[in-house]
Length: 394
Image (cartoon, rainbow, N blue to C red):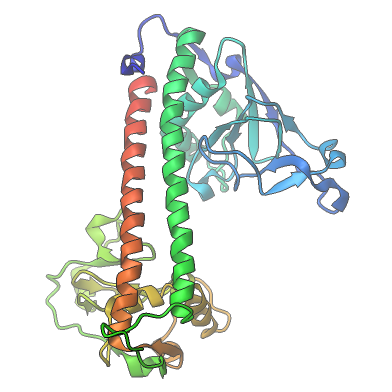
């Protein structure tokens, strides 16, 4: 399809969204009435709404429940208007069938001169403007007022040209959806593989075919010690401890935290191969560092006491059951309370032979590489789509 469709010639019309679509608000039927739920009519909430990827919903309404709900027809646009600060997004989806929706969402039924998919893509392109409107409104939950939504300026060509543009962008969305499904499939496979490897359902053998020794169970303080090396002059890079990337250079993430020269001198040195217990380890496990730098003294830095495969424990500390056990070491933990080394030190950790650790880590690293490759494809495709939307609509 010709990319020249991205142009915005002078013959495009312009109108406010309120003049191009009819608006309706959603609702939540009485949750106490059990007969209202569990039927065939999808009931969409903010959790279900994704940018052009909505196909079903977590909950559904019965025929009786549908009598007390707001139902949007096929080809209506569902737009999130409340809770946008929480979700940090402005998802828009065009319905492929009738669906009910709750009060966090508006349904827009476009006029005959506007293709709903074209309109949906244009609203997606206005995400930054919409989020600025949300911020300026000052609602704590991140709410977009209906009048603000209706006042959005929409430019549009003839209906046939709208359909061509929407069809082209739809192909991009299909490719994105396929890539995301592939990533989800790989992540599911990895979780299953981890379960088999760490439960010892699947074992490796030595190069000569013989079995590795049985796994040992060791206390965490036998395997890891807490270190607090502050022997630096503040000239090392400051690190951020993240749940998805481990320890990374603060300059590489969108975090602007100021630190005085004196406070930086109290920071701890983190070396390549160290593990870090972070403020949110009870949510996402213990983090690993591939870089050298310094981190806040609020973090606990760990070094191994015994021979280990660092990559093995990098995966081990991200197991769901490990995170659950780590959370249980601190009773009544809340945001802002740190998991101490003394709490961690009493935990029992698996200790396979180091060579078997390395084989397990290699297997899981291969999966991570595949997942990362697909994630990179998704990022590039998203950037491509973003460029198209800006060229067409911004």
